[in-house]
Length: 355
Image (cartoon, rainbow, N blue to C red):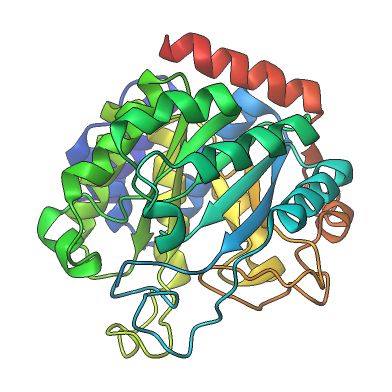
């Protein structure tokens, strides 16, 4: 597609016209420097219109790295004997959550692998009770990322205090999904977002960039997220992990993720889009915000025995991913921390829009 054509797509998006899947694919394919500058500038303009220069912070509590799944890309796959394994106690989780809330994060993300101990309980009582206790201990909204759950559990989780439910499809190409997540159901995972929304939770969907998907696949995912009606969307670059089937699969060029984030911003102007600290650490934050992201995720307190996901150690114990350190960088990033009331108002608008 000629530069004039992609410029016209960008201009129409700035004027409020919806972007088609074919147009999204054209934008995702761009690599000419002038057109990329135009794309990133448009993404920043759309973000500024809807959010100003405010950013939101999510604390991250990866409370169990045990997992029953054998995902091809994941360091924590069940067959990886070199993976870092731990299971935080209830007291530790409460202490970590309280510490993050006190630091001023806007939400707390409680994440685990599909821990066999949790998932062998048909009623998921231990997970529901944990959410209830964390909710009682902190005022911060709670995001839950526990893997795939049965339909009947979602109402109890919402009642216990889960505001958000995150479950990433990684790709919306069914064949590729089966290679990435063997022995798992594409539909079961996709339905998680639907069931969470029906229970009154806000939802997050996410894809990985550089796992063998085509540009058309990426465009399809961005449009599928729109049809799902999720409230937060993310794209994260694939990072090869030791002792996994994809260990030799080359990492994705960082530019691919940045372009994906920018196109996401044009297609989803009012959605929350994370800039994760879990790929390049603090060094990757500025480009992601410049590409249209407005949520800083994977805030992890140092020296607490917590791991990241794609990068299980990077910038954690040196304090690089702490709330205090990231806040100090906001001025030079041209951003400012949103107030807690800003975030509460945003969640109310999200719920009203999804009602």
